[in-house]
Image (cartoon, rainbow over all chains, first blue to last red; front, top):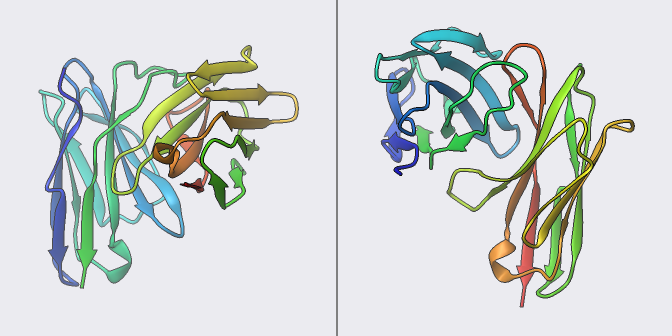
Length: 116
Length: 112
């Protein structure tokens, strides 16, 4: 069974540009969540999608957005990039969405974004 | 405020030795606690998940404990191997909403 696939794995952008990252969940998983990981802050929750609907959102500015398609694949977009957006962006998929959050999270390998 | 704190921040041990990593949390109401292993440049991989009623769970040489009363968890690694070198992340979730609260991780280095 294929795991969570994230593309691209690495990318370099300059300040002010925008970027789109893609995540293909494990087949049958309908919940996809996104996280930002930096050395100083650790993993921080960005947002979670279930059945094409954003169900929860972390404390990030509106420059960070996402969506989910009918096949459960998800994209996240960061507009007007800042130096501080440099990070590893991780996507996780889960089969069970309902509380109390007992679904196992399966992470992708991440997309490493560098903003110059 | 819901928080997860891990200690130590980093740890170096000799191959074959045991070690224990700590996780304290203030997440309430509590649903479950997970430990993940993250190799450098890779995504986190689940080691254990424990609910309120579970106080010990093992996965090979990894044993996690949970004290829901004191809101503390530990991850014990037995007979460490070089491949155990990684970051270990404690994740706590509540039973409302759909957010997970992450610790900043313990970086473990196993040396020969």
